[in-house]
Image (cartoon, rainbow, N blue to C red; front, side, top):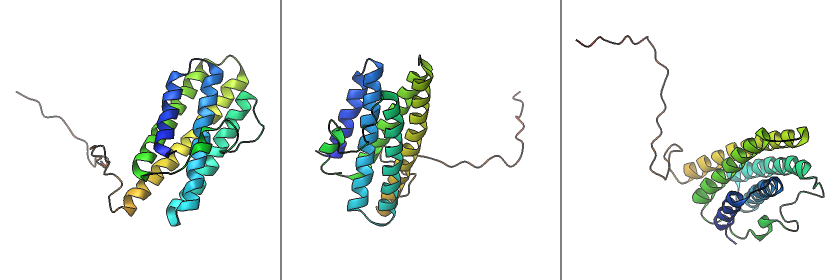
Length: 183
């Protein structure tokens, strides 16, 4: 199955969760999917993309381990284990849109884990969520770096987003601006 479709399926499944075990399971599934995408980049790409793919795979595996501690499932974190959505990953498809959607999924997971941590009734759940947020943030950053690398390779400037947004880098003011009174 194409990565973009799997990622969209994961985002939908996360939106449908209604209890703590399901949220943790979907967060784990998302981390496993990010691990599988990173591993596929290592296998299929070279140079910068392969290196960033390796980093993504390792960071995502760390996120899986954090979430395994929350669920008590430490039987082995593998992207291709039983019950993993990631094992159905076939083709990465077009990298730009896939990475955009993966970044969105990881941001959604981070936000959801923060909400879960705020309402956690045990210290272990709280810290597992916080560790998952931290590990997920590293994954999100790496996905952003991958997106930028893909755009550079395609000859685009990294700040040129395909969604039509313009990004301007502003320098800090060099002198104090005093407003002029209007008469």
